[in-house]
Image 1 (tube, rainbow, N blue to C red):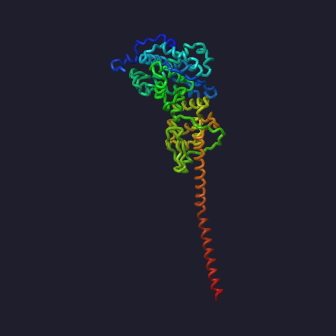
Image 2: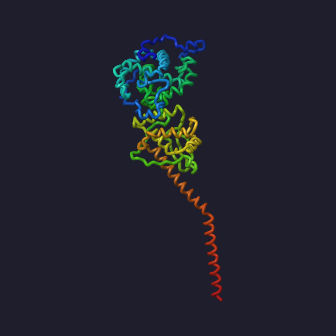
Image 3: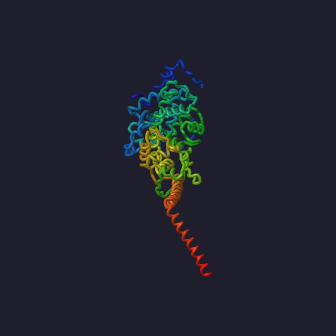
Length: 433
């Protein structure tokens, strides 16, 4: 089953050789290379997903390679990753600028253990963790260090070049091979770690003040500049949607559905933009600007988990609004094809039918009353343009289809006018005689 976090830390030997570094020793190039003053009270941030949601698509919410945090810890198929977590622990502690011991990290995390516990839903009811602060804190430490090490390799952090090149998780090749599969697990709602864990670990390791720690974390956690999220999933969502909150409509908006393929038919073009808050419809150029959505086997679970998290947190509604907007545009495979051709949808699922099914699944729990002004305004403006163009086109088609009758009637009126004119002239000459 592998070592528990407590056993891992207790049995830790910083002089122990890394198995992969030993294998690569002839080619190894060695790199020469404070506690936060105040912590704000952490609200509940990491939730247990309701069973009725999980049952519809279990694989979208279950980690395949790595457990993070208390909910999935100890599951047999995830224990293989524990040896990689221990290697991350060794490298992180050896590299620490402050040379803090493992017990130093545990002590610092113990100061905020109550806040960390409050971040998790129902953790106090879990038999393994409810009366074990020491074990819980060590779990936070081990998983937090793994997360920092994995994300730092992704960002090309020079300090993390002390892993063997053939390391299956932290080496260049192994990281590229396993990146999508590990990241899929790291962005599951039940597989999150509070931001406070990561900021505390970095504060102790780097001996830096809070603002510097936040800056370092924002560079490796997909976050917009100066954004401090609740956890990795939260920062990922803000990163892909552009961050920021928008005014939410309090009234239940009317449902408008307009096929993307019909919009193209009536001259509407689509343009990709980098963030949610740049969604616009330009009526002068008939261009609807939307963020692109990547749909593949890895990103689909991320959207499912992001959506559940957003609906539970109840603050920002960007993703809920974006899904609502896309749902209004997609009614068939023709619409998926139209959006793909314009670069709005990037899919590797193999068929447009599969994309339609994914969108149907995503919209099942979308709350229509919790949609903000940006998406509603875009839908209303493009709808107004569409119906105006449709009406103009319908009028033109009527004129085209009835052209012969119109010309015939006009000709007849002209002939009658000519006859009347001739008759009037003849009558005038006759009376004159």
